[in-house]
Image (cartoon, rainbow, N blue to C red):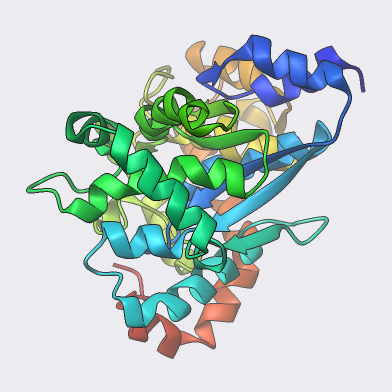
Length: 339
């Protein structure tokens, strides 16, 4: 695979790369490259998290080694629900969910934040950053990812730690949703002030809530998301209630789910249809789905049935695992049963 092909794979389904020129330069160097994505174990793993995680498959295909940071200290700093004494359980839960959510060819490399973020050198660098970062800058960096009503000091530490993680994980790129942009921009501005190089930042779209425009998936709003261990009935019910107006592709939850999650991981998307409605259809490119749906050549009900069947099959292992581990979910305040 040449540089241009690798570049196009990495660019696929992204909203922004800071910067494309730097990314291309890295690829042209021909050295081994790595990327990381962080997941703070604060709540249920749902489809909103899996879209960004699924992007790691494109990186792997492009020859970039992926790392997944289970950011336990970030979770404790940001979320009152993540009590310090529960971190071990939440780390195990999050890691297991990610392992079960995809058909990994190779087990991904997981790194736990507290394994390196409490080291003397890391803390020293964190203190250095704190001396050159204004409260205003820290507030701005954290504004999209932390709970900013009457912010705690810990929430201002969060973006500084996430920036240092790039250096201490020894990666060339960081991957995250568009809500991470302020932190990514902070990292690029401040890491070199303490002697570390800027990294390439890759930003993916945020998938809309099942409920449609102006909403987003939230672990605390069960009807807005699909967990990987939701029951078959719950998955089907949520998909059938999903925002998917005929012929409309903008902010269409079902279209986003196929283009940003199913197609990148499966390489194709199969739609079963009665012969009188055109027969079965196989989609291989996002643009193909957009064109056919906007021309009303695919009915929303056919699309929803195909998505529900895909997710039910995809999450079978996770569902069966947590059926045997309901006590784990209860301990973490999570629910296995459909809402």
